[in-house]
Length: 167
Length: 174
Image 1 (cartoon, chains in turn brown, cyan):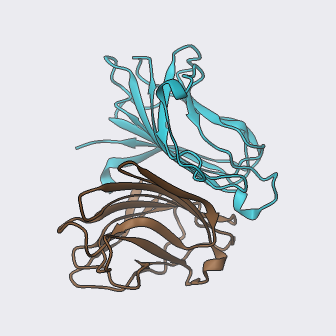
Image 2: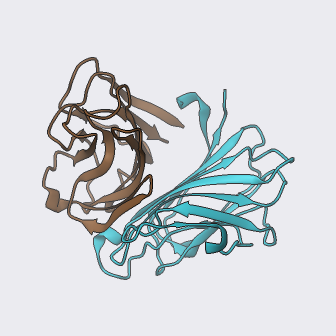
């Protein structure tokens, strides 16, 4: 079963969303979100902290994006961001990114993997598809997850962030 | 969403296993979903999902963003159709030494798996980090067979390692 563990529907700006005391009873977790930040750019990145770990050197990420005729990506770098995965403040009005994040085997004593898949839109309705994965090379179970705009700004009202357990 | 996804079966692997087979798949859902969180016990390579034991029907595949170092799209003439089933892009292994190698995740949606008047379409998402290059992929496949799917064999390139979880869900659309 897919069970909704928690739901966040922002009615005002918020610097981050945190899921804490995550139940340790599922096989995997999934975050599904519709987000927009108030950054000064048309697209933003999502910034993650697992179990409160904000040290970027502890993470490793690879990703690829396709936007109109442009592709971009990286083979892996020390980062805890998911690039181009959040609509920014100067994008077309009323547009929010759609993002799905899979936290695979989050209770197992294995290196932790977050897979992300996102669509965002910039200032001229140019949609971007981004897919990537992020490694947190520790074996402890994930009990909390914080998501924030990488720009340092806020998620705006209307952003929704839901956490599901895959049993 | 919660009421529409039902776990049909789940296999947690405690020792290396080459193939996990789901048989007698209920014919009561509209779609199927596979969630495969795994450690791969063997070196790089790709696995497959084979339906109904079929080794002869052609399976097409197209995808984008395989290998993040040079994001590419592939499909059509760039991809040789398979007759062995739907490809599971893995490239996850424990042989190169880095701890980040030992984990990966694939999701597959099998659309309208009971319908017998069309070929079956599968969509997929793949997340495999390695030392030598990352395969983060979204793709789609067509199994050129009109039979209802009653069995699915999920096979690793070599073998699924201990800790692998392979789960089959039934999706019931409103």
